[in-house]
Length: 319
Image (cartoon, rainbow, N blue to C red; front, side, top):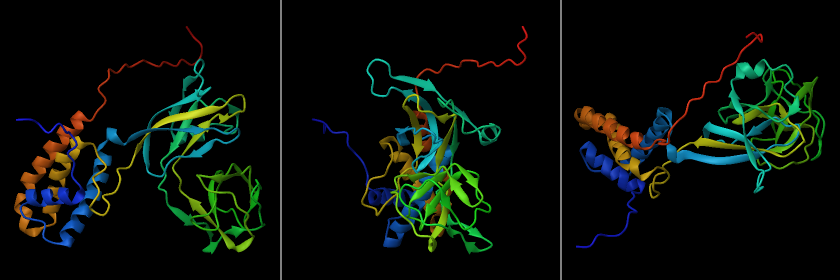
């Protein structure tokens, strides 16, 4: 007998939910059964992201630095950065070079005296922000644009800057408006502004209540020193992104095929925990789920050799 010659087995979500309901102890009977399974699946994939690294969600991306700008947005679905380098002479066949850039914490970055010093960046702060966008309020009153601006203005005057960060992002007019990065504040003026950030478009805005100001919590990186103009620096990084949502039920799941048994077992367990007549199967289903997830997670890992190199620092110059 011949084999199929194919290795493309997959399950759309409806099939996965049917499998999970059957493992839990009964058939999927209604549209609500599918809906509650979808909700459990979305929560379970978030749980997987909290458990650690999912190799299939790691992507390589890059940012081209601009002289004088030290903070850059990264995609909103980024969970964390895994690794990163500074690349010079990108695209050159003979002298392209990847140089180390060290990740630092917020307390370490806060102690840097002059954050606007320009040179080749050697340190990076990763800001894992929430992606929420909220109106800027002072005493419950919306902060607005105090003077009109054109598309190229780099100083923006607000009705108030009370409570604002010394540097950061604002969004003009609405939660879908232009995003601007400002480097410093003087009085009510945001200065050294970099317009049209995070793939938005520079626009003209009129002063007054028609242009309220919003504060977007954008995931971003901040580098030090601030990039200079001696060459073009490219920040090359490997990020771990969120697992995509379940969808309407007809799509396949955003996961490596090796995790399908864990997905079916885990979904069956989660379904049983909220279905009274299936409560007696919870312990058995939890055991199966843990076993299948551990098998998949044990396979989904980096298998290259690892080398640890001591890094020693000495203060005082003594022998």
